[in-house]
Length: 360
Ligand code: ADP
Ligand code: GN1
Ligand code: MG
Image 1: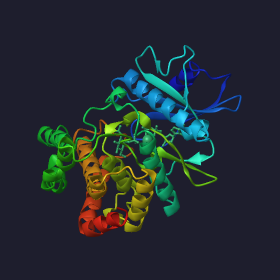
Image 2: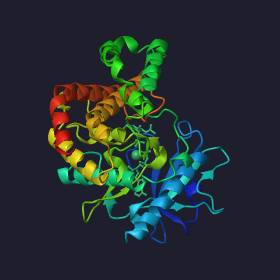
Image 3: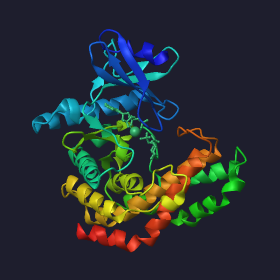
Image 4: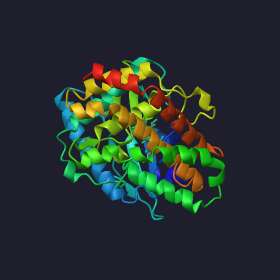
């Protein structure tokens, strides 16, 4: 098996005992590897169709994890568990570019912690909020200009909308006729897609070093203490908006249904979880969020949900070329849950804003 051959080219000892696909990420190919000395690793094939400049991507990750490691050591934490630890190749490189041009990397496996695909207890969600907020606070002084933009315009929702419209016009798979309701739903809200971008350009919202993919399964929760021990999936750490980091967590974690639930009647915004996240995130950011950022938190939640919705729908129309799918119509189900969640946010808009005011 290819992955088995790849792991031996990194600085690991002895033979492979087991190697199996792992996790539920939509982008990279991830494997959990156990070696005969008992050490465990995460081996990933980087999706180079999406991350077209792996050298720059890994430069970002090395920079950010080294920076975090120093902070963790300074506060007496455990650098082995509180940030990702890159295992170099046998040549000492941070990733491997194989002869067939596939790219691979290895992290030490973080033991005694779990990534959840759904909120099991409100406490877990609170701790994830605290950890994502703290992640941003710890990177507040990171030299942002040294970070490469791994996916240009990643959270440029207005551009995402134009890309979506192109997918509708091209209608490569002939599927557009069957999703007119969803297309209309997206178009009716097109006027909101540049609100946050405009505020950024006008200097009303600050550009910060953000994670940009803050869903619950990108955080490891310590099995013993329940704390958010490590923020993972650092592929999209780039300058961005704090409200987007807040918003993506709400989109994924404060939904009463899974991201890909086929029965949209199960979808709604859980206001209790929403409030817990507002509390944890603002605490984690340690007073750094400006008044405008706080005010725009609900908009961040709505726009991240909208953006994901149109991205899933565009991918459905393009023949599932971006997100991994596990059944026909998977991306359409994902789109529908996002749109149902937006409809519920619109119903609860006033409450969403009032909750934020409590923490201002
Ligand atoms: P993707 O970009 O595909 O989402 P991730 O980097 O998030 O890839 O990894 C996928 C899953 O692998 C995570 O959700 C988590 O369960 C697991 N994982 C990733 N890195 C580690 C690690 N260092 N230790 C333990 N588990 C990990
Ligand atoms: C992808 O890599 P993963 O599964 O954590 C995607 C995010 C989406 C998310 C939707 C690089 O995240 O932008 O919000 O799926 N990552 C990339 O679940 O496109
Ligand atoms: Mg992930």
